[in-house]
Structure formats: structure tokens, C-alpha cells
Length: 489
Image 1 (cartoon, rainbow, N blue to C red):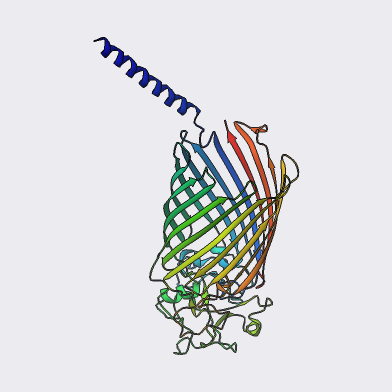
Image 2: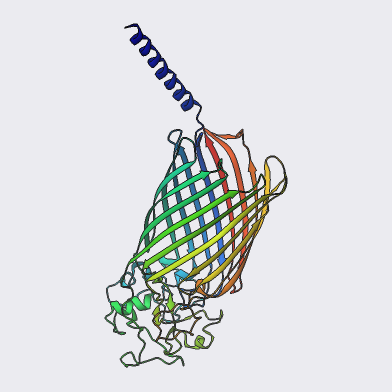
């Protein structure tokens, strides 16, 4: 009996000791995220150019965009973090306004000409017979501006030794002609005393169009392909010579296709692989690769195309037709031959690398390279370098430069250089051959002790950045961004 009592005493002592050690380990285990963090970023973007895809590869690309993003990272416990990101982007676009260049009511906003007919006589009450719009003039239609809204939630769990991280995410976004829903997961493993890291991510996006089309194409179909009905009733159509055509003639204008879009879905599947290695106290190297497959309607139903082997027809001022491609044209618009049409699958493979080097206490070097290939014929190279320069304990400036070039897609041709016998075609200069340069300068303020406070938020950092972008096709843009990071008590 005495031996049994001794055995139980030792056993309970061991169990109590183990529980005490576990509680100590739990007490002193470093949390993945100590406090709730709040990031707020706002940006202003503007661009201009002469190759708008909505008007077939010519016309103003003027656009402004104001975006704001709020990201909140919440520690659920020692190991788990929930991150919520909400973004809204409001833009005004001269090019997309020309979905309906013919009047001020914005027929393209409703996908037809019904709302232009105020008195019920099947005529467009807002149409101005003295002018038919222009690729170079911004319309005041409803498609002139819109907002893009996105909400993303991400959950991550770290193992006790912090060498394994598992995560999942879900997202939804919406703009007036497009809706997207996505979800995915990630797995990260650290080795070699956290000097080596590998990562795998997978994401799926199920998107759907609520398509809007160029007004003349949509209206032609809604009018039963009769140029004397609906939108076209009472509107003169001109040929290349400026003569008014007979709408009952078989040679009168008509689009190449009367089916505008037959699949409103677009799905994207992506797999990302990454490897990172700390080479020394001063150097870090990483490589990454993505495999992306897209299926569905991958063309943009807003974008017009014009063919070289079909006659041209216009609405507006006949005397402006000879100067149609000039910015001097303010009052005549060419009727589209079709919308952009592209294959219903696309396979993409980007691979790249980063190398960061700590030169000294003042200067660091961050470099990046990526090669991209897809089965549409596009291949590209991206290279960038950033040089953070520490001015003091709190202030750092970081100038950077980015170079990019790409080949043209197999289906691209400029305005009036496509042919109607092709199966696929686009005049979107994002799919053209071009190169670009981007110059940026940023400055950041960091307060690691969060001494400055706003309500219950301690200010951790402020970042201000300006970038200037130039393409050799003539597109130029500028972006200002301002970001704040807070820590919540």
C-alpha cells in the first residue's frame, strides 16, 4: 500500500509539473500578431493617351480614379489572425463614356436605347442631329463613371513553433458590368531556423458579366436589325464619302455579328509556388512561379473593332469624316463592325525572382525580375530596382525604377487593320507590342513605439509615394498614394 501511495504521489507530481510547463510555454509563446493593426491607403490616379479600346484603338484614353482601401488585421488568439480588406475605387473615364457617344442620356447604361425614348415614340429624344459624337470627345452618358468595390477576408493559422502557416481567403467584388467571387488557400513552411521558406497558394475566381455593349450594336439588334426602327429611326447614316445612305439598301450598314456575347462567365484558376532563402545577414533571395488558367468570355464586350475589308459608316457631321482619326474631329462617329472577340481559354505562366541586399545602415537594394508567357502570343519582361535610403531613425526615402516590355497578342491589330475573316480580333493596346518606364519616389515615416495617437490608435507608419508611367504608344499616367498604419490598443 505504501508503494502504491508513493507511485501515485510521483505520478501526480509529474502531471502537475507537465501542466505547469505547458502553461508556462503557453504564457510565454510569442503571439503571431500582438495587437490589432489598421492600414488605410488612398490613391489618386490619372492617365491620358490616344488609343482607346472602346472606340476601336483610337480616341481619348483620359481617365481619373480615386481609390481607398482599409485593411484590419485582428489577432484571434496567439496563433490565428483574421484580416479584412475593403476597397472602393471610383473612376471617371472618357473612353468608356463613348459606349454611347451619340447623346447625353447614356443609352449604354441600360444595355439598350429604351431610356432615351422619353415620349414613347421609339425615337431617341436626346440625340443631336447636328453631331454624332467623336472618339476624341468625352460623352456625358452614364458609363462615364463607375465604382469598383471589393471585400476580402483572410484567415491564417501558425503552428506553435511558427514554422508552418496555413491560410484561407474569400473575396467578392462588383462593378456595374462585372461581378467576381473568389476563394483560395495557402500553405507556408519554414526550415533551417527560419532561413528557408517555401509557399504554395491556390485561388479560384468565378466571375460573371452583366454585359453592356456599344450603343449602335445593341440598338441594331433590339430594333430587329431594321435601321428605320428604334435608335436609328430619324438618324442619317453616312458612307465614307459623306453621302446619306438608303437604309433599305442591302449594302447599308450592319455589324458583322448579331450575337454579341454567348457566355457570361469567366473563371480563373491559379496555383502559385514560392521559395525564399536568407543567404547571409545582408542578402535574401526568392523565386516564384504561377500557373494560371482562364475559361469563359475573356473578351471585353465594351470594346469596338473596325475591319479594313468592310465599308465604313458614320453618324454626325459629314465634313469631319476625312479627319476622323484626328483630334480635330469633334462631331462624327464611326459605327462599329463588331466587338472584340478572343479565345475562350487562356493559359499564363509568370516566373520571377527577387534579390534584396543590405548595403549598410543607410542604404539597401531591392531588385525584381519577372518573365511572362501566355498562349495568346504575349510574352513580357519586367525588371525593377528600389533603393531605400534611411535618412534618420524615423524617415526613409525609396526611389525606384521599373522597365517593362511585351510582344503583341496574335489577335491584335490597330484601328482599321483587322480583317473580318479572322476568328479572333482586338484593337486593345494592352495586348499590343509596347515598352514602358515607370519612375517612383516614396518617403516613409516610422514610429516603432507608436507615440503619436489618434483615439485608441497608435500611429506606426506613414507612406507617401508618387509614380510616373510612360508607354511608347503614347499612354502616360501618374499616381499619388498615401498610406497610414495604426496599432490598436
